[in-house]
Length: 292
Ligand SMILES: [Zn+2]
Image: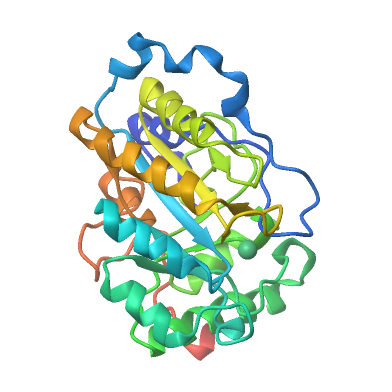
């Protein structure tokens, strides 16, 4: 990754994104922190009115869970778009979205991103298996017509080879989980500000956004299931509805809500602004068998 060549202003964009210990779906090795709960002053009138330019909120929904159809309804209600990270090999299984539902999400303006073929924990796989999980997943998505530009590492876990492999598979960037040092603007290690769990209040979600607004830069939120009292990694639809309504109103203050790929492009973290543009880190041919 030629990260060192990124200009400081671009590095700063990602640097300001607060990253908490993050996980993805049950079975993660650590419990996600909820930094918002500790930031009591964030809702002061002053904080509410300070909105530096270029704050971008990225809403991500992981695992292709069937009940995320409810999230899509709420996003439509509030005029927002998000990124849905799906594991293509699991689509259509009980509790998961179907391919047709994924198609509908894309038609509604949401980004469809990769999440590996089988929700693999990449840091525990040899490079060859990582490549299969990442590349085959992306090929399945693109074959269906979804131009998957970013992926999310399951459990936020990546090994030392993972970013390079993801780039060679054709991705522009990837959402990681754990915090990166502030000077790191690696498009393949986009940090997460908050992973929402059943214990996360609407106010905590708002505080994560407000904290990002004070710093500027990107605020990435992670959601999984969407239902009341149905699991540790679920957001109550009522809380999500309230939060999205609040977030939509923040746009009047300059905060934008974009899918991941668009956010990375707008921030200059990856090249281009059109769908066909390739990032400098991208492999020459994402689907070339010779590279696998
Ligand atoms: Zn996941």
